[in-house]
Image (tube, rainbow, N blue to C red; front, top):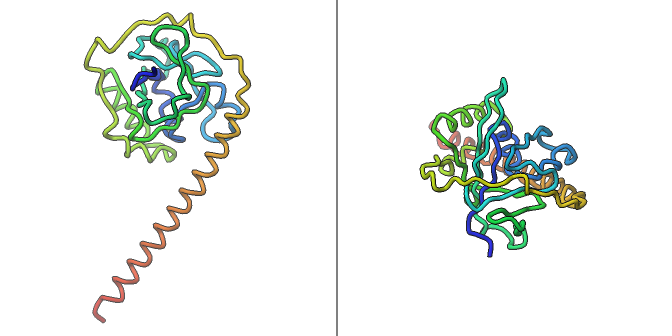
Length: 208
């Protein structure tokens, strides 16, 4: 039985890419899907091309030092918000796989950081990006890692690619992206018309 919560390890350099589409995909999807950001960095605990690795406990991993600031982020997925078939056992104790894009909402996920400083860096960077304005809806979904017992070491050399063709999943993601675009455009236009109507009503009520 799949645990209620699973953790996806990633890094701060991927945060804007994840939030711009409110989803996380296997690393190989990003160069081929033709929307959103193409840059997606793999980390030691999530290094596969055609699968996402998810963990029953927060996996400890290290990011090599570079000129760019980069640190671990963990996305906690509430598996009850998804189809049961989406996540399956890897054969490695405590590790699960997903071969598709995982779409997130403020109700289906949480973001975990090692400290408040990391959170402030991420939140500051997304505020400067026009593609991640929905992040404010996730304000109550950011958490510090307070309990060291939550963190566990795994053997990442045991992770294996699926070897499956993921073209169908990419085609599905493209359709989802178009539908989201139409839906958001409709909402924005409806809101603009609502504001104009309110202004007309207010103007008509003002004394002449």
